[in-house]
Length: 323
Image 1 (cartoon, one colour):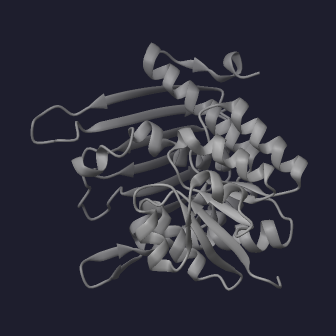
Image 2: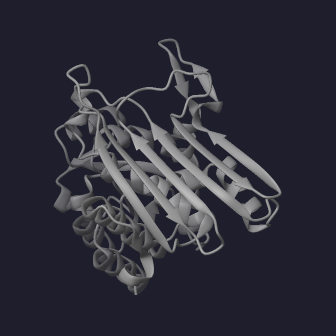
């Protein structure tokens, strides 16, 4: 690649640590600047990066690329500012809850000749690359059922930093379902809260059912209500059943003792692989992300229909609402 790509981080919260670790495993990048959030000063000092205002970093000559790691409502603004300044951008999920905003980001990046890559990170794990390829090769035959779950207890001190699983988690399952099966023809969805004083988060849960034109059914379940400590935990699980075979993935298939407990190593690995693809394949070789901005538009559309199904308590025909 030649000179190292100089990267800036916009947003210095929890997920920034994952991106810092991922960048540290790549030979062709150095983090030169950070911005955004009350922790930016401490973070910049710790990693030896310049601390800038958000408005400064998007146009700064200190960076060639930016990771936009802010809450979703700021993604469009900072991504557009970075693209207009000629920066490559990795924008975290959910990219936006507005299809028009995603279209503008995509068009702006194409006009400027820079990369704008959605942070749809799970698709970069080798196990899920294999799962997608196996489906494409029809080695499972006709897929009858896809199940995607993300299930854990979100403590109150973290809950207040987020909006809810339908906003902060569900996009993972939507982009995976899109990658594996394409677009559904209809869907229904429910949102509940588990009542009771013992559960301080309110126990929000989302359930989605989607039907496809091949007769396939997909089920998504995301919950912040409780941990699964059983022998087969549904912390993050995917199962595909076809008429000629089946496949399974769990993020807890690989855990490591890190001294103060066991770490789910595949969680960090997805950031590592995503960062490597962003730098080497997209910026370095001009290849497409495994999940594109076009896919991000469809995730946004499907999320809107899920929310419509929840609010109106009805089955939603996808073709009636997406032209």
